[in-house]
Image (tube, rainbow, N blue to C red; front, side, top):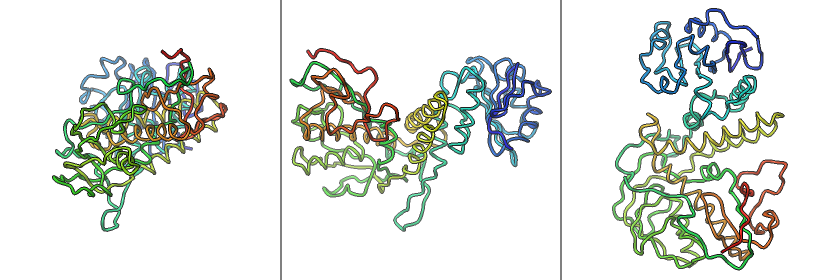
Length: 440
């Protein structure tokens, strides 16, 4: 039987859920410990060390030590001499070698702040790591953003090109096509606040459930390189995704924020991504806004390449519902949310990852979430004549006469009403501690 996670402290040793109560021999010789541990591991596993044990083995045990350039740390040198490869020694250190399992080593005290699987009780922590590995097929190894990116890459999206052949996506695109100052923003209170309608004295907030994952599921992006189109024809956009420089059309509906996003000046030229263009074109077809004029563009074929990724994430999230322990359930579900959110943020940084950098994907995801929330509020306004008074990212606030948010929810807002179960993707749920204040 192979193990997925081991934890060693000065008092007990865990191998998956088995507590031995004794320490392995020669715990001051890490390469020897590593070589003996891998005999019980599959292709990949996690070794968690408490600070006293980590110190005896030569690992850094303070944040200052872990953040140093430890590429030539004496422990790394010793591991390489024993046939292992390791980039650096830190809070997380990964050891790998040909025909050997990959072992991710964590110093327990150093990963407490950013690891959702961390727990005070050693048994709880080991169990959470084992469950994550079982449900995802991968070890939790590193900060949530790193775990999320590796999980995204493992889903291996291979959209078909113009010749109908599967083609790997281009994960890193450093070229000039992404305009330096182009960006999209989420909805925020500073962007827009509506005129309070005569609807009642209470304010209730409703959040879109796992809005980032839902947006990632449907967003259209260019999987490969972007090419510059200097003067697109008026009907050029369909079938393409990327950046579009447009003349932002005026918006004269005070009950809703501008569908293009943040506040703008009249006749402003702005770079936007595909979700924003799609929303503006839908509204232009309804006759409520002018069709945006595209001045120039950096685009590629539009594809929905993240569906397998979001389906696997959702599968892990819902499988966690079947766990008996609330601690386990919350650890795994928080891991899903944190890894997905932080992975998407890392796509906007060329320094954090050496293989993933797509600003166009990052900002398209932000725009998709914003447009999804905007569309729902627009629909509720027309169907129920209930207009929002405030947006905050994926949250919509409404005024109501009732002090009870479930009773006050607009009829056409798909609210998750069963408090005994987890809200489904795409539904709304009552925001935590919704304010009940007297409208000014």
